[in-house]
Image (cartoon, rainbow, N blue to C red):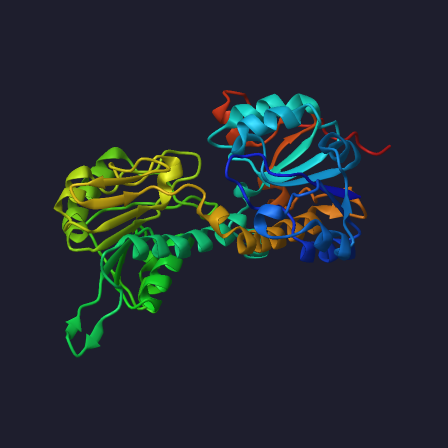
Length: 396
């Protein structure tokens, strides 16, 4: 089976779905790789590295789609609505597409893709189970986003992070607050601590307190009734408006005491909850910094403008987009390992043969057989449940 890797078409996307090292990994699984020339250039991987690893170059994007039985992308369908609209015309029945697809936020792109007869797997929907950890693209990319967010803050802050004792006097360390202790938040905590900051962290899930404290940070506890704060798949669950309002009120004092606030709270397929109000920013000292990793979903801070840096009452509020792409080389290496492992998992003997009882394939398969098949996506599109397959006739 041939796996095709086209150039990414989403604006500013520098990552590539497979790196040269993954070519050999897939070869062991009986899969060959072909790519559009220059597909890895933005991440620092030359075409010659791919060919040396055994991949083929196919000059025409249309020819690549025509010849490949599977397509691997960083951003496909809903994660790149404009680019994928053009690619849909190149796809054919029976072709497998593996990518991040933002299916909960853009389900209409899956509805449009279904008539092509492809089998589409959205990697964001991987279940949070032990067997899927090596395929978890959200975690691998969030790790890098958390790291880079701290570097952005350190660059914008007119202070240093660590305490420094000099002949001219002692400089006190900067105080960093991380909101959200998921993968990105935990990496932000670890990075800020390595740089010498005094770090505090808050999360709606009390269960992460031990993880926060193991990294040397203080866990901020607010007097709130959180209820069930994550879904059965291990992802954050949206809370009601009253909860977020009370949370924001209690958060104000903690934010005001911080030199840097890094926000990471996101709920899949929904707008990011507003956790840092405008008045909270206004209570921060001039020169302070907010880095809002959730900017792509509208941001956790009311002042955030996605893709911009806003200076509000002397506080810099940074709304970065697609942070992993700014670290494209390492981000692509991690993503490629996730994708190669996933492909080897769902493809057996050169064909798509996921087991019926396999939660990894079942939870990520969003389009198949001309239909949107994922229950959550069908619900968002206002579609009823798929009809049950007819029962097998009893043996005579």
